[in-house]
Image 1 (cartoon, helix red, strand yellow):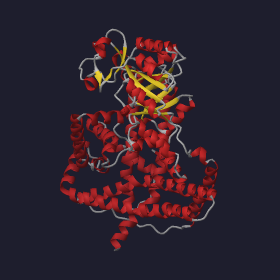
Image 2 (tube, rainbow, N blue to C red; image 1 turned 120 degrees about the vertical axis):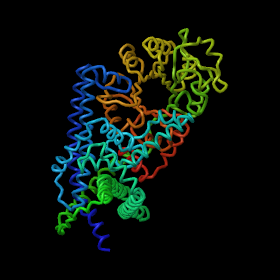
Image 3 (cartoon, one colour; image 1 turned 180 degrees about the vertical axis):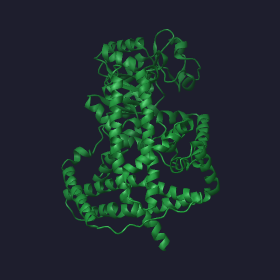
Image 4 (cartoon, helix red, strand yellow; image 1 turned 45 degrees about the horizontal axis):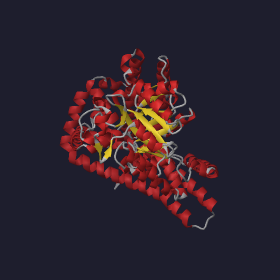
Length: 585
């Protein structure tokens, strides 16, 4: 019993030190990232650019400014690893010994081992932690990418092709086995100053010999931590909220108390997030020493502290939270709107509602009540514009040829689920007076000629206010916005950095992961609108429908429209929860 109490005491005693360290390093990282951001902007502005995005990526390897940005990014990434992971391993060793935590000293001890990671193997380790570990959910990952996932526009292509599904599954299993085998690689680098190759060999040896015990210890640790967290949530959040609902209180008081307890829950979740990785690394460090047959780190139990400061801190926290809750209650409908103002745009015509990129699909979008329809146009061999997404007609019509290899007459002989291939003019006629058509300039013919021809067609039909021209390539969009300011434009991007909000366009269409609350706010401050593409899952759609974006491009337009109707029936608690999840995701 005493041994179990001492084990628990180790972790309880570690909490103040973890909090101190986390707050200090968050400040250090914030300052560092701010300075690096300023440097990147200066380098970009020196080239006349305001941002670099997925459509302009060659800039990074074709100019000295771009190469310098890459170099600074690598240096920043190594520094981030030193602070976000290496230092936490040093921290875990100090916490296990019951040492008093000195954050600056920990950082100083975490930086020297980084020299062992300045090689090809080290880069591989960092890239794995940065990109692969978050997707797999195994081991630890960097804070800035812990929510990373495979973008929808990639995962949807994988899901639609059996070969890709099998290949992706095999690849993930390989990465999973590599990750498990090398779980202790950073411990070897940081605690024993081993080169990456030796640290990896040692980790694989330890895992082979102890994998059963490792799995057992991990399951027990996660269960214990999970039970403790559930107990705290029940006591601090769930039970008080249930009590608020059953007590005969006025609507205003119920709303204020709901805001108070939900705000408390959010603060507790942020604290839990701060504690999670350091506590897990403490357990990992214990197991690392145990599997190496090293003696446990001698634990120094501290004397009991004066709890007056703790009581005052808790009282202050409750007071500030309550005052904030009263203020938020006064602006409740503004902060947590009842209805979604996000407009739905059907992807590739009508999404799953009709044949892809056809008039029938577009008309179906208007029938179900969509705000807009997004189409893809490509130029034919004889200079006309037809609707097609892929490089060829193989997937939709069974013809291997590209639009550029066929005349309009030949293309009209194709059939997409019984419907003819539509032209740009067909799409404009099907849209006029019914909604907004988002015309994407697609493929190898997305050039200035296509831009001029598309604008000409839109003007001929008098649809300047009913069309938005979009493209993954920034150059045609910048050209249209500068040459034809009366035409609405949108730039599609799935990755960018710099002052993206200042790009020359009316809409910025962002991939799901890029559309953070901060990014959306920055774009709106520049007077531009935000689209998110391509959100198809119900959970993802709900997330963005509760956000401040302007439009959602989706294949499942009916599902999104049903969700909008459901959101109108939400309770105060649901409205708060949805908004908070949107902000912290």
